[in-house]
Image (cartoon, rainbow, N blue to C red; front, side, top):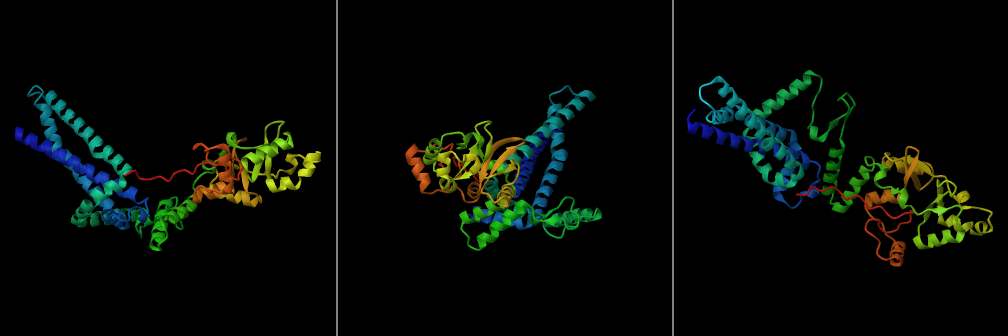
Length: 390
């Protein structure tokens, strides 16, 4: 093979690798972009046009697959002989062994470049910088898809025809719907990602501010998030002791200013229930006389598994006519959760004058614990919303 042909084939191979990377990064960026709502792209015309492509995402993803297929086949047809000839020039001429080695080395190098440059790197980039990639690549890909529309339409029709042969019918874009289990009758439903996106779009069109939209989505997510994410850990609880002198318990309450407290049994350290502050003061005379103890005043508290969803934990608390629950992992109490914690999972940190009073008495609260709340413990910080770092 002539030197000019080897150079031409190698250069063409590198161009095909770049093309393969373009289609891969675009595919993953568009897929990742579907997790955002329209407010996240508002004000950027290029990004808004990319977001509009999600309405026909399956067509644009098919366009990516067509491009990837063309580039991959082209690498084998055009570039592989060039790489083999490149290595062949470095080996002794004429032997079958040298030819086999050069072909093997060319195949190995080309596939390594294909995996690293053409597949893995653009995949990571598309996921981690979805908006930035979509802003740059989506306009180019839109034109490519328009150019290849006959091929895309034919392949899309053929793919759906094959699915019909095995009993799977696609009547709408799969972006807007997820099938249940195996796509059986009655199993069609919106998936969580599509629900979030469509909720965000509807609320944005209604003029709902971005922070209110986030609260609506967080409320929806209560059914997906485990209660362990918002619980107060056992080692951070402020507890009242049933054998502790009343004045010591009152001093602790005066210093922390909570509205409810877990009660700890001195004999074994077990948490026996929750005590509401108004009820304690209603029986303070009996407590001073010794007719009652805190354990007798504590209300039974429901226990919920740490893996239970926040929404199910709320239901469990309300079914038990309570506002708090102990969170358990097996037989161990690992924390507790209140209605206040659940509400903060939706609206963020709640503050009242007692928070300011406690912070003023104790100095600035450490960022790792949060300000005190009327829940018997320091407030856990709400988990930050995941953002695309682009």
